[in-house]
Image (cartoon, rainbow, N blue to C red; front, top):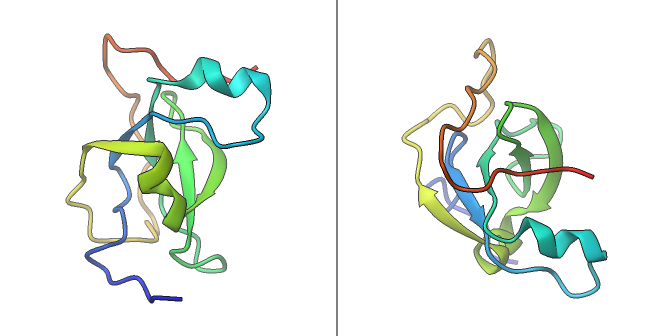
Length: 105
C-alpha cells in the first residue's frame, strides 16, 4: 500500500460533492448524488486513512476511506487547513450553497 503524503491527503474543511454511488450501497444512497459535504478533522486513533464526512450543519456523520474519496467525490473547494487533527478548533460552519445539501434518512 502506498503511503499518503500530506499533499495527497484531502485537508479538513475541503468541500466535496458526492458524484458516484458505491456498488452494493442501499437504495437511499442514490438520492445523495450531487450533495455537498465537508471533510472533517482527522482522528489521531484512525489516522489520515479514515476521512470524517461533515454534513451541512457541521455534524460529523460518517467515514470513508481516503483511497475511495476520488472515486466517489469531487473536490469543489480544497481547504488550505494545515492542522489535520483540529485540536481546540471550533465546529465547522454550515455550507452556504444553493446546491443540494447532504441529507440523512
